Structures are given as C-alpha cells and as structure tokens.
Amino acid sequence: MRRRRKQPLALGSVYGYLETGPVVLVTTAWRGLRNVMPMTWHTMLEFTPPLVGCVVSERNHSFVELRRTGRCVLNIPTVRDIKATVACGNASGRTVDKFAATGLTPLPAKTTAAPLIAQCPVNLECRVVDTRLVRDYNFFILQVERAWRDVGIRHLKTFHHRGRGRFLVAGPTRVLATRAK
Image 1: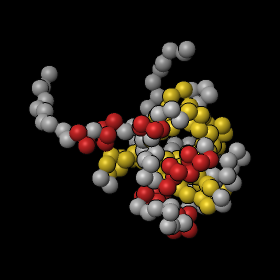
Image 2: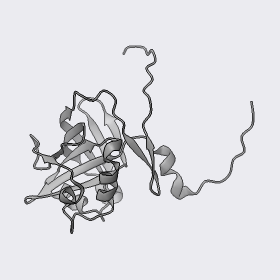
Image 3: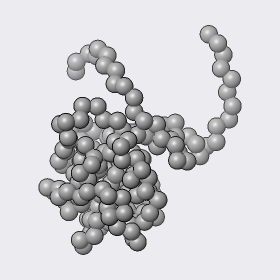
Image 4: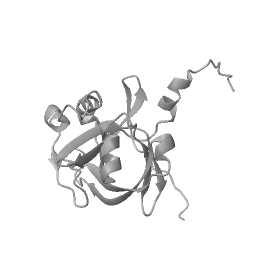
C-alpha cells in the first residue's frame, strides 16, 4: 500500500468535505411576503416520520420567518438552477424579491403559506417540531408533513456546496445488494 502524504487542512475548510446533502432552497412566508434562501447545513435525523435537522443563521432573514411561523418548504433544485440558487444566496430577502429576481416560480403548498418552487423536482413541506438547539446553535428540527416529486425526472442531478463558490454535481447512482431489514 502506497503511503499518502498528508498536510494540514484549514479548519474553516472542513465543512466542504463533510457536506454530503444537496443544496436545498428553503422557502418561508410571513404576512404575504415570500422568501427563498439556499441551505446546505441539513441532515436526516429519522426516517418515519421524516425528521430533518438544519442550521439557519440568525443573520438570515429566513431565520426570523422560520421562528415566527414554524413552517417552511425544502425545495431540492437540480444543477439546471444552480445560477438562480447562487443568486438567492447573494441577496437578502429583506430587500429583494428573490422570486422576481431569479425567475423561480412559486406554487401554493398544502400545509404552509411558504411556497413550493416549480422548477425544483422535489418539494418537502415542513413544520418546526423542536427548537431546543436554536438558541445555542441555530439548529431547527423539522418534520416533513408532505412531500412532492416530479415523476418525469428519474435521476436528480443535484449539486453540493464545497465552499468558496465551488460545487460538486451528483454523479451516477450505483445500486448494490443489501440485506433487507
């Protein structure tokens, strides 16, 4: 076995190696105003009911809306919408209508005022079920209450943030035999 040479890694770069989930677009709504922000810090916590843990910085406009309403939609974009996603991250919902600015299309959801995004092939309507870690870590626990997917898309070509404007695009799916549980 060839020994690999190692060098120090800046601690601020660690997240780019651990981020495995796709970039999602979080939509919120408060008093008729909609907002959308990209988010990469999320993780599955439970299968059924689906629970998702996520970090939303208190500096983001979406943090305030999520605290107020306890509702959001996690929309999963594909690489086709990477430029609109980055544009959403480079603007503030306090001053910009990101839907108008990016051409993303809001659709009504069933359980929340926060919209689905038409261009995203997967949409997850969520309710905040636990805020105990918000004060210290900005960590919300969401329960997915309704989930939607575009049946015309077989392979989601999602993208994953690696930091500093770099993204990894999901590649081919490999299916391996596993033991049934």
